[in-house]
Image (cartoon, rainbow, N blue to C red; front, side, top):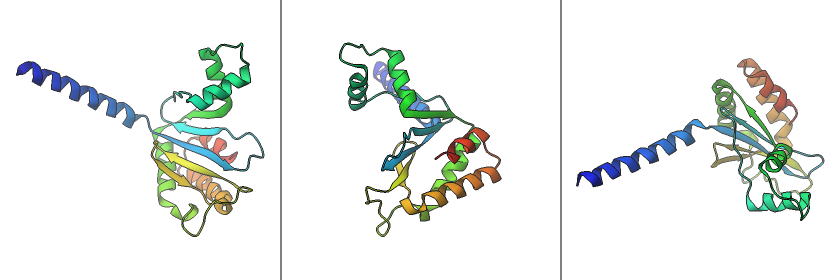
Length: 168
C-alpha cells in the first residue's frame, strides 16, 4: 500500500509542477486578421522567452520555401519563426497592464452587431494565455491601439512594448 501512495504522490507532484510551469509562462498574442497589405508578424509578449513549436502546416510551408532538397535544421526553423513572429519579453507589470486593458475594454470587440465578416478589412485577434481570445472590431482597431498606448504610457510600462504596439 505504501508503494501505491508513493506513486500517487509522485504523479501529483509532477502534475502540480506542470501546472506551475504553464501558469508562470503568461503571454499575449496580437494576431493580424483580414486583408494582408504588408507582412504582419504575430506579436507575442511574455514574461519569459517564448519557445514556439511549428505545426505541420508551418513545417510544410517552410519545406516549400527551402525546396525539396533542403533539410530542416533547428537553425532554419528558428529563422522561419523570426520571420513569422515578433517575440518580446517584458516585465510582469507591463503584461498585467495589457491584460487589464484587454479584459476591461469590451466595447472594442466583435459581438452580434459588430462582425469582422468583410474580407476587405483588417483587424487583430488578441489571445491571452492561450484559450482567451478577443477579436477587435475592424472599425475600432485604431481607437483600441491609441487608447492602449495612452494607458501603457500613464502606467509607465515597458517602453519597448509601447514602441512595438505603436507599429500595429
